[in-house]
Length: 117
Image (tube, rainbow, N blue to C red; front, top):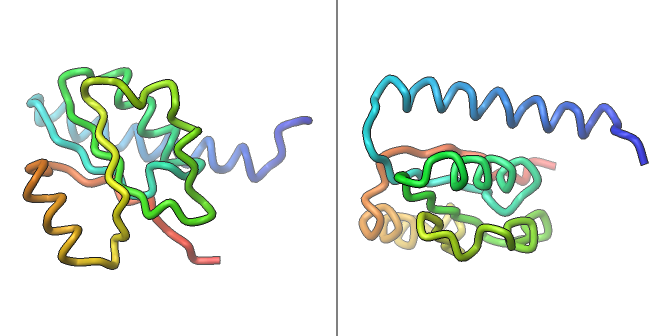
């Protein structure tokens, strides 16, 4: 099974998102609590894994509603990492979202959650 243009596009998009975010973080140079919405999806899980492994001093909070597009099996290899947290939360639930922000003192957000199709 070869790489199709859709897989290539998703991979390229993930690299662009991470590059922009990392440029911002390098500029700030401080410990962070990074919330990633849609972190169990195709692109999100790659971003989460990269950040968990590359930045052990950052807490990575993976927030996902786990609809048909999300799958935690994508992240089985990092689920016990000390800097990784998963929260099953729908971003449309404002009270639950506020609770996550308060609990983890979120400093940065990478918004990858979307079901626009």
